[in-house]
Length: 430
Ligand code: AMP
Image (cartoon, rainbow, N blue to C red; front, side):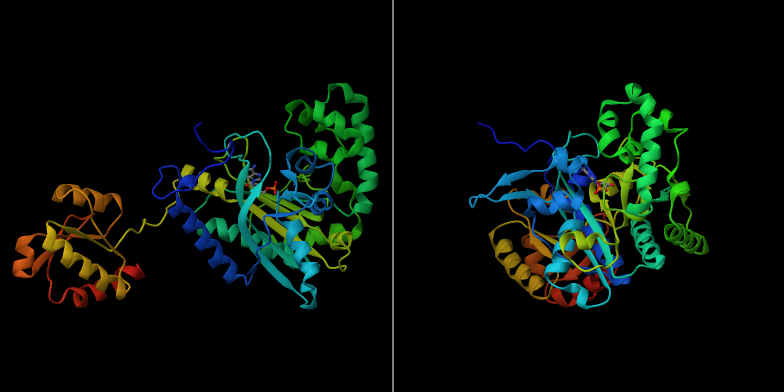
């Protein structure tokens, strides 16, 4: 039997050509996420990878694609139904309520980690994928929507992404959606036979989801459909206008997309998505929305919230497609290449001293050919290589080879660490 990756998953390894498989690129994204979260004062939360199935059924909505088709659900040995988390908000809300985080008036949280959806794998869509998300609890004012949206844009900008499109809409309140849902159903009913199969099913249960349909025929039909904006209640309308003006004041470009509803049932007032021009069919980098009143569905307090989540794989694909810069991969600062037994012994001592002084270092093993050692140094992304042969040991003089510039710097082995320390400090700051 051969063992291979489950479909829709991938390994993340050192030095890979595709960025979404390359651990150094992931570290760069993760560092940037932590830096931006710190700037905006969001604290990290880590919740379990699996939760009771009921949490997601309640949290995501039983008519959503996620719950109806895509969950990894299993029975544990105690006979309880468990599900690998398909999204982040439900778990964060569960923890928020369970740990009474509402005792602090505002909570601003972020998470990073793997999520699971049983979907047809394709470019930009995996069965195990990774998201970073933020949740802002306790603020009903559009200022919170504005902050979450600008945090998302700041993250993309810090990663060098360009030409992104911010799309906004208001889906009103549960109450104001009732007449809209009816108007939309009435409009679509006479065309039921021409709707796609998915949309036919949604017509009765959740006609708003038809607005999300990717089917070109459905989209054409919807051109003349009634618009949510005409059904908004006064509070939602004012909220939306205030958000738009906050964004305008900050010169953040956006478009209002009257058909944007997003897949999840719990949103009210603001919904938004950010799309990238290089992602093709799966062009949505991230999205979010407001979920005031939603916590009560989990027997929690009536506290407003707004959140956002973005896929890390899609960020990486966009960065590659747009030629966004990645920092240079950092291998060892010094790569020692000993030639012979004495040199190996001395290398071990140097290696120990280097690591003791916190200078990243490694030693070449295997082939005793200088050329092979230098090639490996380059492959590992080392900054300097140091060849140690009989001559160098006898004279106590060696030369540091700059692996990329191919320059040589003479160095005395008697003051090796003292010479390297300031060089390393300067390098580490770059
Ligand atoms: P959602 O929770 O469906 O709103 O998704 C938020 C973001 O997560 C999307 O915009 C994608 O960037 C990412 N995402 C969702 N599902 C997948 C998937 N199956 N594979 C890769 N990324 C995904």
